[in-house]
Image 1 (tube, one colour):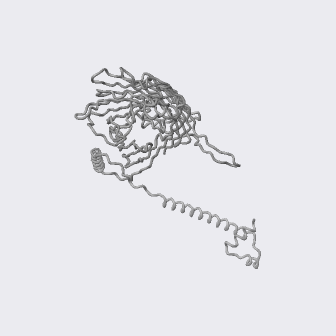
Image 2 (spheres, rainbow, N blue to C red):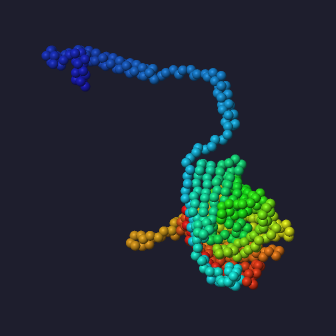
Image 3 (cartoon, rainbow, N blue to C red):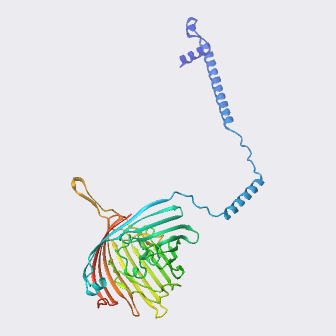
Amino acid sequence: MRSTLLLGAMLVLGVSPVALASEEAVTRDEMKVLLERLEAAERTVSELRQRLEERDRQEDAEETFQERPEPLRPDPRWNQRIDELVAKWSAEQADAPAAEPPQEKPRVELIARTQIDWLGFPQSTRGVDFIDNPTTGNAPPDRWLFRRLWLGAKGQLTQTSRFAVEIDFADPSHVLLRDAYLARDSLPVLSTVIVGNQKRPLGLAALNSSRDEIFMERPTVVDAFNENLRRSGIVSYGVHDDERSTHALGVYLTDDIAGDGEYTGDFFTNWSLNSRLTRLLWYDEASHGRGYWHLGIANMAANNSQQAAGPPLNQARFFTWPELRTRQPWLDTGSIADVPGWDTLGGEFWLNLGSLTIMSEYLKTWVFRSSDRNLSFDGWYVLVAYLITGEHHPYDKQRAVLAPLEPYERFFLVRGEGGRPCFGQGAWEVAVRYSHVDLSDRGVLGGVEDNVTLAANWYLNEHSRLQVNYVLGSIRDRADVGGYTAGQFVGWGTRFSLDY
């Protein structure tokens, strides 16, 4: 250690070891003095280093520290001026009319619906034979037909206006107009207004699309009081109470213009006032609508006055087909004279519990006659359906009707690995319906019909379906045809449908 200190002292003092080696030997006292001087030099260096570090810290602190300036105090007049400008702008916005949403390019899409039926009546009594063929009395024939063959277009003209046009080509010799309307949405008070040829809001089954109906045909009572479903008119639709309630209120022509597209006569004497109210008493949001309970009421008050000139129009006629489409109606009141108007009232019940659907309606019509006692006709149905593959029938909250069903698994059949077939099952459903309609009263013998219909439905995907119906029916209290006023029948039907 001392040799190290000695070497350091010599370097500090500028003494070279080589020089020392050439001089005389250093005495003990001289060595002591050298060591003391070395220790003093080390203390000096340490103090200088500490002072330098302290000065560096002070300079860093002075560079990073800046004194905060005193905050600006706004002029009170500025706040007053801002408040005045905000109040003026708010008043101008309140008085200004609501702006139209930004215009977009019209969007148009083609639509089509094809329904191909194969029908047969393996059993029928003579009464039914004469009802179907009054001249010959032949049994109802088997039929293969296009039940519907619709082509059309629908689209969005702006964010709040839309249109639809559908034409039925099922009978090439008699093309029919179906939907042909313009609609305006998001209106104050009226919500949605539709003008043109459209369905009258008279009951649940009437408003359900044929694409979504559980059976091949609607119940007999629907056609009896709302023949062909559509009329030209103007209607307001609305949805309320967080999509729990709906309303429909409209005025329609009583004449059907589907065949020629025009009406000739006095609109103010041949019209109907239609209304419908629905309420969704329960809707299971947690299961995305697998459970719900719907109630509804609908009414049609029809005015059927006489024209000022020409033949009288104050006649009424009510008729309907069986629940397999035949060539002509099997129940028919014929023309009822001196009828200035009639009124139809209906009630709707619909309960859905998962895959189980229960649906029922009752409709009653009062026919007012000016020269005789009034008449009353009625009808009802109840159906139960079950989807054995687990799906459910969705609820359309905007229109309070059936929504399209989407299978959990679409049907497909392909060759897989090793030549094994691979397939998807689609959705399968079974259903039963009982229906009743009475068109006979006070000497008017339109007939009374009861039907039991069994159904099996195979939903291949959301656009196509195969249906099989089996119908047991009876007719009584009908006007005499070929000497018969009653009859029974058994019928079956198969339908393949495609919709897009």
